Length: 190
Image (cartoon, rainbow, N blue to C red; front, side, top):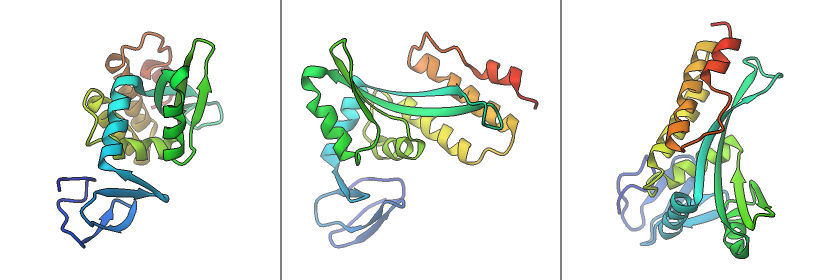
């Protein structure tokens, strides 16, 4: 068996493993990752990663928040899109992830399942990281942003995080991004 999660190097039948803070389980010949009573097989994680690569999006935004000290908030999101005719796959994903996020059916005939809770977005990025191909840079940058947010101590640190968020503009070919690190820089005392 190869690496499943960052802290595992190998496993032998019957060995008890500690997966990040995901939980303890024994390897019995089938690779499983447990999270809040959900079991994800490697096949399922690879399938979800492929779905994300093809019909999904990972994006980070700088959102105005007047009640925050820095007057802005970093929002990370994962979204999966599908023709409404096949919305069952999105409902399956929502159930698999523990009924988090929002499932919407648009008048355009497209449905989307979006997750914005920071803790959940980070958890899903960690789970899918070994399997994504096309969105590997977005996953790595997203995890870097989450790690820097956890260690943020000053306005200068926050501005550096905002500059990382700006990189999503090129990775995702974003055209509508109006709030950037320059916007934040102009409003923050450093």
